[in-house]
Image 1 (tube, rainbow, N blue to C red):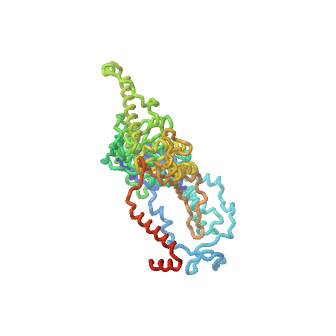
Image 2 (image 1 turned 90 degrees about the vertical axis):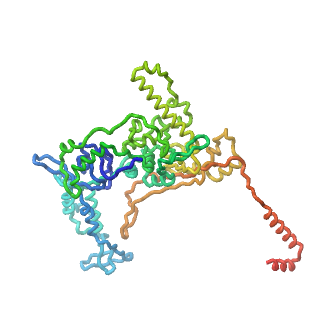
Image 3 (image 1 turned 30 degrees about the horizontal axis):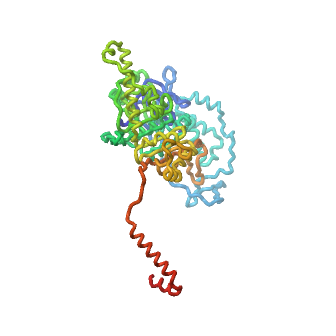
Length: 588
């Protein structure tokens, strides 16, 4: 399995930039290119390649001798990042009773005092917000931004200085105002690795959530927990059943319509999402580290594009065209409903489904087929065997026609292997995130699962999952067992699917909400994003017993006890009440 290395920033990698406004930007770090981050400026990609992740950089605009603007990066040390937290008092103020105020010597009322009566925070109930408190106009601020050559600190200090009512603000209001201006004007960013959780948060907040069916990172974690996705050791081959079907081995069946986000999450859990490091990549990282290792403690990295471009190679990644054999363990079998699967988000992990590289683990571990190839493979053109040509005829063909023939044969052999393995079944789990009716999906996929396999179905809304849960309810299962319909008539109106194949149907949901936690002001943040709640349906695959089931055992003891109770009741009925009372007491 390929191990992901999140220690150093590699060339040609996709990374996420966390801006001061807490927004995320995903960029592609191509060597010798300029990366733009909007209003915060731009920087050279060579300045960050080869450095550790989670460093905070500050964009500095400088002017050289020829009066031309030049961009540099400064690594912000941790002592500067957390200076405010280190200087603050760690004690939490104690709130007073409701309606109680304390007057200071200057006549100002306070709401919160310490244990010894010391004033902690001033009240702002009598302060009226005045938009004219800020003397600087927006035009003046924009002019200062255009003339500023620093990182934005001078501009923030000028804005705070020009506020006429700054001394009237409470400590909390002043900190809130300063933080708002810092997020807006300070030119800083932090580089974080692009994993599936970060990609899901970026797609949900910054990009198009409908493209991924509004799939959030907490729902992804819930799907991974209930589906029991894990990495199976490579030396554990799948078992073989009586009909030569593979059982187990870490094989999951997936229906993904989230542009590949669900497939990426499953592959990350199985350890097959990231490609191994190539020898030429190790050389590139060594060159960059030798050039840039000194700027990790606050030093400024100057813009020297020509020198950097001469040291960092820019060749394209290697892409061997030789076909590799399919894996037998830790595999993901993807079923799609289109002519080609939509796996566009896998490009952020350097995998192209249309032209995969044999160096990437997903090329062997990701198996793709359509619904037509699963249900009726004889009707699909890709499952039709190409015409067999003798060796004598092949020798007379041109090289281009001969290679085209062999390519068709390899594609047919690969597709036939995937279809036969999928139709044989024995998968460890089924994970679905689709806009299709889940009842129609489970009708064809549940029989392909082994016993005790987990089924997880995601839907942005709960209505379709309630209908699916009703199809596997106890009442339908009991009616199906007592009066089973003719298998040739399935599905029927009462039984759209076999209700005996899944047990314990349950619907779950989870959503993390951000809260403001302050004394007397604890509440959820009103700026949180809405959207669909998101629900998942979970159940366990079972194998119904075949034939009639009867309970066997010896019931002689129970019959004797029943006879004794019958005789005692008859004797009591024939005995007078007074005598019967004495008999009962004696028996007791």
